Length: 439
View (tube, rainbow, N blue to C red):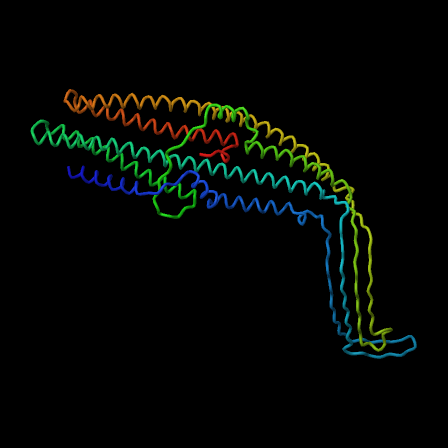
C-alpha cells in the first residue's frame, strides 16, 4: 500500500508540473527553428557565398590594373682605362635606379569562357538556393515529427490520467467495501495492482515527454528550461486538396528541381569546354617612369629621367595541349548524358515515392476513421459495464477488461491521428509544398 501511495504521488507531481506550461504553436516552433537551427544557419551562409560568386567582380569581366615600383641603390668600386691610355679608380661610386609602372590588361575574348562561367555561377547559385530549401524542408519535416510526437504523448498523458482516475476510484471503493466486509483482500490487491500499473504507465509517458521536449529544444536550438504545451488541435487536408497536389506531381519537388539544374550546369560546362578552343585576345597598356642617378664623373650622363605610354593587343592561343581539350570535350558530353540519366532516375523514384506517400496517407485516414468509431464503441461498452459494476452484476476483472479496452482504443486512435498528420507532412514534402502549408 505504501508503494502504491509513493507511485501515485510521484505520478501526480509530474502531472501537475506538466500542465503548468505555456503553449508553443507549430508556427512558433517553425519560426524558432528557421531562426536558430545550426544546419539552417550554415546552409544560409553557403547560399550567401554562392550569391557572392555570381558578382561581376568574380567573373573576369573587369580589367586587371597593376601598379609596380622599384628602388635600387648600387654602391661599387670602378676601375677604368680608355683607349688613349688614361686610367683611374673610383671607390664607393653610387648609382640610384628608380622606376614605377601602371599597367592595364583587359581580355576582349577569353578562352576560359568568361560568358559561360558567369552563367554557370548564376545557375550554381540557383542550385544552392534549392539545396538550402531542401535542408530547410528536411529540418521542418523532422520538426513536425518531433512536435507531433510530443503532442501525441501529451494526449496520451491525458488519456492515462483519466484511466488512472478510474482505477483510483475503484481502489477507493474496494477499500471501503473491505472495511465493511463487502469485499475480500484479493480484490483490494487486484485493484491496487491495476492502480500501480496505470501509475507506472503514466510515469513512463512522462519520461518520454521529457525526452521528446529535449529533442524539440535541440532542433529549435532552444536553451530555455521553461515547460510548454504543444498544440493538439489541427485540421487535415481535404481529399480534393490532396488530389490536386497529387495531380501536380513532382514539378515542385526540390530534389527534382536540383537535378534539373544539374542538367543545365552540365550543358554550360560543355560550352565552356568548347570555348577553350578559341584564342584569348586582350588589350594591354602601360605608363612607365624611370630615373637613374649616379656620381660617376666618367659617365656620359649623371642623371636620366624618362616616362611614356605604351599600348597594344596581345593574342594567346593554345593550338594543342597534348589532347587535353579533346578529352575534356568528350567528358563533358558524357557528363551531360549522366545528368540526364540521373534526372530520369530521380523522376522515377520521386513518382514512386509520391504514389506511396499518397496511398499511405489515404490508408492512414481510413484507419483513423475506423479507430474513431472504435473509441465510440468502447466508450459505450465501458459505460454499460460501469453501470453493471456499480450495481454489482459484473466482476472487477470484467470491469477492468472494459477499462483497458477503452484505454487501448483511445491510445490507438491518438497514435493514428498523429501518424496520419505525419504522413500528410511527408506527402507535402514530396510535393514540394511543406513550407507553403499552414498547420
